[in-house]
Length: 317
Ligand code: P6P
Image 1 (cartoon, rainbow, N blue to C red):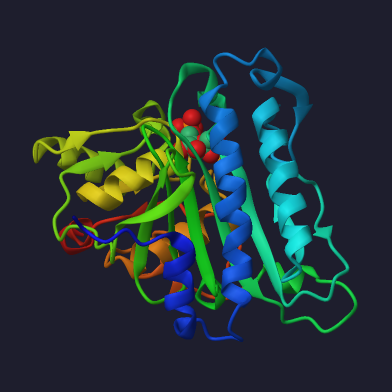
Image 2 (cartoon, rainbow, N blue to C red):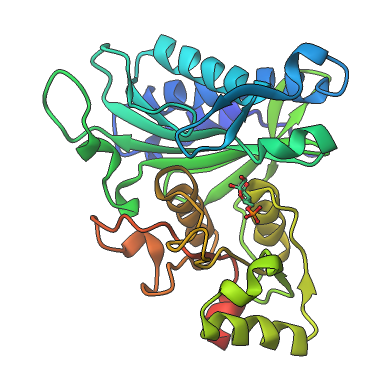
């Protein structure tokens, strides 16, 4: 029987890979590990607990209706990140402004605490996405400068997927590893060591309802996917679509549309962290202009128009 390695044991074992002082990575990831378990508990009972389902009656900074679970997850992650002391500020999809902790922490976190939450009511997998930077500003409080660093400056990135099982997947720039929550012991255990996306992908994921909005080249590419008999798979929940393609090979793209002329995916807490993960797993991420997202210009603020999770697409291009 394979040895069980917990996330905590793995982080401790790999602490030397983390550029900065020992123990800091453990602390940084502990918040996500603990909050992931607690959000998982609420997501799993969402169909039963009336008080956690449905809309909150408010909108987030993106103008999206906040679900009750969005607010619950956001408050929980912020509370846990504040309490562990390594993070001094958080930029969250659910908050209009930077949330400051005034604790002298050396890191900042960008996060989407519960992406795809509109899918909660229909039992579709949803996820948490996070991106961690070392602070670069020197004043009392973190600034936009800390959050707008290039994707290549991320010290760690990860996501939690709340699906048929709950998994935490992360990278610190030394490969990608996946941990599955064992509910019988309430612990994330290493289940997907050294994740690599397949050389060839047979899946393409895009909201084809926007097809006639897409640039002509993207329309031709999608037509080519059909001619090559690729499989169309699109759940409309980014973490679920991304995770499937990362494991099975394929491409996820969200090109520019009339409604989102720079693409819909948010740079700070969707495109950058997932780009780091897919490139660390041997895939490619691009905004359609740069060969590799995490090597792009530091001041690039346009949302990524597509994230590729397969070399196959890149070669075919
Ligand atoms: P569309 C959810 O709001 C989200 O940000 C991602 O989780 C998802 O992949 C995407 O939007 C779906 O967008 O325009 O296809 O409904």
